[in-house]
Each structure stands twice: as C-alpha cells, then as structure tokens.
Length: 461
Image (tube, rainbow, N blue to C red; front, side, top):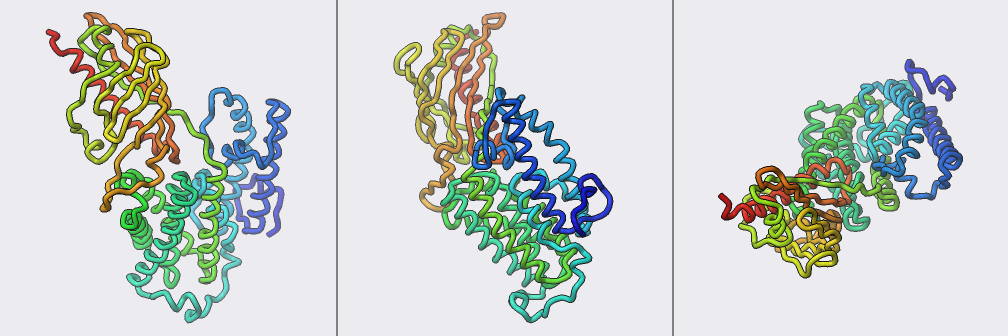
C-alpha cells in the first residue's frame, strides 16, 4: 500500500508500516519548518534544529513561562491539524495490526511515544505477517523454556539485567532522573518481559502483567542491593514505575497476539533496547525546562504580629518530629537563628541534614520577611542496608530558591502567618514528583508554623 494524500484525513481502513513511516517523518519535518517560519515572521524568533531550548518543547512538552505564552500558544494552535492527522494515522496503523484503538493515547506520552512510533514502524501488518513460523530449534528459541514458569523466570531475569544496565547508564553516566528513567524504563521493562514470556507460546493477560510487575520489583530490589538507590526514593517512584510497567505489559500482550513469526519478536526487542539509551542521551543533551514551583501554608495565631515576628525571624529548637515522612529520613527543621538585622542579614534554618543559608532580601517588620536561599542541605537521608549511600538525586535535584513569611493582622489581636517556598526539582514527570515535593514542603512548613504558633501564644490567656 503506497502513501496516499487521503491517508491524512481518512479514519476508515488501514495503513501499512511503510506509508506510516513515510507520513510520520514527512509531517514532522514539515511541522518543524512551519514553526520556524511562524516564529521568525510573527515573533522575531530564530532557531534551528540544533537549538536545544526549542527542542524541549517538542520532546518533553515543557511548561510555559508567562512571557512566552503568546508565542507557544500560537504554535499550539498551528499544531491542532497535525495532532489530528497523527491521531488518524496511528489509529489506522493500530487497526492494521489488530490492536485496540485505545493505544493511540501513547502517541501523547513523552519518551514512550518515540518507542511506540518505532514499534509501529517495525511490525508488519496482519496480511504481511502471514508466513510460516521459524524452526523452533533455532537460536534463541531453543534457549527459552516452553513452560509458563520457565519462560516467566527467563523473561524477568533477562529483562531485569538489561534494565539494570539502562539504570546504571541513566543514573551514573547521564545523572538524569527524568522521563527516560521514570517512564521509558518501566514501560520497556513491562513490554520486553512480556514479549520474552510470550515468545514460545501466547500467554494470558494476567501472566503478562505479573511478569511485567515482577521485573520492576526485582530491579528495585537490585538497585538497593547494589547501592544504586535508597529505599525512600524507590518507594516514591513505585506508583509511576508499576503503572507504566503495567502499560508496557498490556502493550506487549497485545503485540504478541499479532505476531505470525517469532523473528518479529527479536526485531521489536532490538528496536526497544536501542531506543531507550538513545532517549536517555537525548534527554541529557536536551533536558526539559525547569518549572518554578511554589508551596504556601498558613496558620492563625492568637497573638499580635509584633510578637509573632520575633518568633519568625529566629526560633528555639523544635521537639523531635512525630510525622512519618521525617521518621523515614526526609530532612526536617530543627531551629533557626539570624546573624544581623534588616536587609543583608543572614538567616540559618538548621535541618537534620544541614543548614539552609538564607540572605534576607525584604525586612518589613512586622509584616514581611523574604529571603533567597544560597545553600540547600540534602533533602533526605536514604534508607539502605549499607552504612551510607549517596545517589545523585541527593545533590541539587530539589532546590529551594526563595522563601518568605507574611504576617497579616486579624481582628481580636490575632495574626495570619503565611509561609511560602519557591523551589525547583529536577525530576520528571514534573507533575508526578510535584505531588511528593509539595507534600513534603507543606509538612515542613506546618512543623515550623505550628512551633511559631506555640511560642507566640505562650502566656496568652
């Protein structure tokens, strides 16, 4: 089936891998150059394919800055026809393979969409794949057990070994904790383990999902055993890792049902194994833009702002923490002291892992204390069976940039005390990790604010 212009709008029918690849590459090139033209003519923006900051928009769907919204929203409006065409082509390609159309959602997931596109380009359509199976005695078929337990064991161990190499590459060499590690790697683990498990015989969806998730569990245990990571980080990453491994397992289950010859399994596995390190290198070279995040917490204190202010600027040692996240190793505040007074003074907020150093930028007594952060301590102490480990994510992957305390007088001599922290984190998907980081920072806020409340209300009727 040769490419036809009607491929771009027809929902009915199917499309083979050659036409799908042709249209995918052609439309990507056309869209890229159309965006360049619009950027140049309407916004006086000049860039090329080697402009890494622009490629972030295409690869990772980075969040927009307020000043860039008109520019990027214009490009988004222009993208709507291309999104439609891409969806049409993907649905028709899935139909030619006999896959459920629901898998079109992977077209919108960073990193996974690259692997997904490659798989759709490699697999033959149902008509193309109707040829006799290969000799069952040939390599590597002869090495794989036919029994369900044996093939599952080989699938889990083999995939876990490849995943450990990929994790070492991403964490130790590229030092990235991004889409490739937290989305691409679990998806590939589920996908590859399922394909290997179903290499000799088609397996049930339950068996495929069990193998996919056991692979993730084994890799997590190995990361702890070989001192790559600590338990706390793995617990936080577990929900997203198991979710994408399950998605990969479901795709693998769907793929195995369309195979007509086992050589197709090897082709797909090789494509995925090569694409994941490529995605890691691409993410290292073109990292997603960092969103500046903010967390605000507040308490009402039965004391006037003048009294509350004294306990905000510096405060005595807090009691031992009762919160579970602090008992698990997350850094928590112990006390605060200040050297000097007014703008330029240096505030030290001492945590269990070291001090935050906070130069004062606004000293509006007793209404606003605002400061930048020139030094961050480690965000946590990892749980590990060893005396100590130091994974890369402890260095600069969660960075406070600034903070403030705002005091608002209320009726009856009371005060509304608001604490705000602005921060970055170098972990993706940003929205997923923000759930964790916002909760941690809010819990830190409340530990401090409640201590200030207790100190300020001491002696009040």
